[in-house]
Length: 245
Image (cartoon, rainbow, N blue to C red; front, side):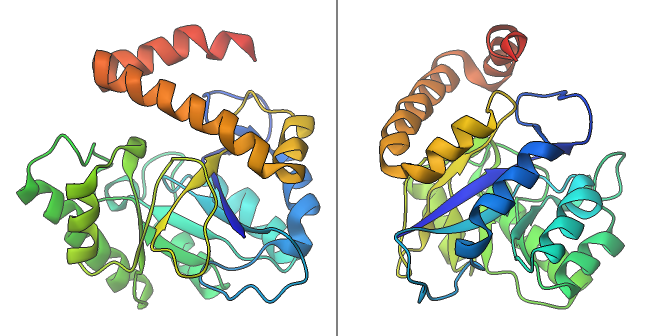
């Protein structure tokens, strides 16, 4: 069994956003899973119950400044999903840094061109988000892009079909679960600023139990998004969740 984890921004000091995690928590994580962490797509021939795949969304500069040195130190690989329109902005990766990630053995994927809700946009815009983002990244790193992750975790069957029709081999969701080597739609467990090392350790030790809890949280978030819309959802999350960490 394989389990993919989602990380957004790593912060050296104070946690700013809900999806941030601390450097200390990231260090704890990779030290805990290093022997069972595999590159995505790698066949699992390891003598263990669970193999872990690390993924990063959005293309924050911490991917290069914090994550890469620690991953290389542990001889680990990860998959980084990039939003081309974010590249070069403050606190985001540059193309030179993205190329360095790739040259150092990290896999690069697409997280759309403009980080839009792929369910809400027209099919024409959706295909542009899929095709243009992949071409731009491929031109910059001179490697094929195989994987796509959904911005905001928003997807449906039509969007999934468009992803594969666009030539991607895999799509990554934000719905928790596990997968095997034959799967093309990859669930992920997201880490966030409310989690402690004890919580992360529980996820690692008992991913099946936490999968149920994660699915409940995912369904609640999905319902909030549908009822209130994305803009109100983000306001509610900041007001309700962020004050408690």
